[in-house]
Image 1 (cartoon, rainbow, N blue to C red):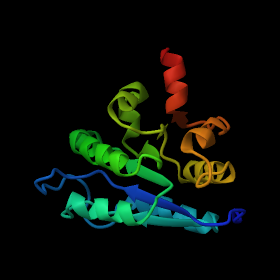
Image 2: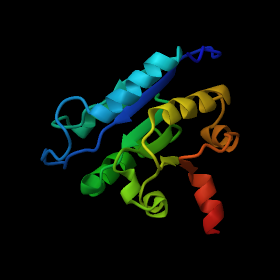
Image 3: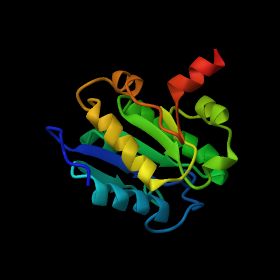
Image 4: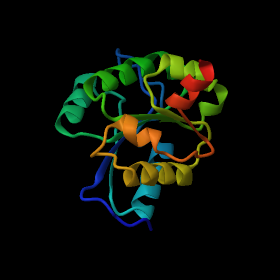
Length: 178
């Protein structure tokens, strides 16, 4: 169990692959099993995380906006699914507009089918998990928490992270591209 060394809890929002704005469902109905595994891993291995798994199916985007405007989520994680790429991009872009200081993560069991370069170019995310691993997610959350997430800017926090195998940061991608 990773103990709380912080003055407050970290709020995390996990968002499943989404549907179209017309309400056509592409993703699983009910609780997303992969995101529920992440939520349980956080709850079992940390004492300072409040984790919300948001279900998009059939829920207007305005409801998500209301949630993000009333609660600051230090981390917003989005589960990638190739078949919902277009709609996911709409939701992620909206979330980024509503909460630009959140750390945005992209991952999921389907993440290996896409080149991180394409994903960084398409999505406004700060990090991509190239492998689905709940323990890696817990480690990432712990690393950003101990480096001042919630008190320092996300750029300062992310620049202080150690290299984590299976996580590609946007800053690493940009430095390799230049």
